[in-house]
Length: 139
Image (cartoon, rainbow, N blue to C red; front, side):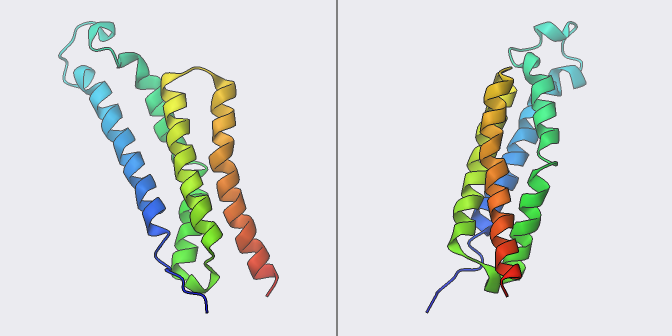
């Protein structure tokens, strides 16, 4: 008998949502001096000013490929009969990959490294969809 907690995917899903919230807070902190007009020269505002463009770009990226992560998690939570433990492992790999990808994109200009790190979360979601497709097609 297989015991499954159909709500197990909530942990990585909510962790990822929390990560996106953290990115919004970070971007707000970075932009605050300019928004409130507390500095005359944007270059003098604070040491994180140069991270504004990369943080903003990274935040936008959170609403591209990750949408497919949200969708599959919702499907699996709604259909616990389809759930397998491999989904949970892949979901956590996705979350870890997104966090590492964000850090690399925000603090580095190394596109090759960023692409390599992106592959972690890309393949994790692709794996999740592959399992689902095989499961449905095999029935």
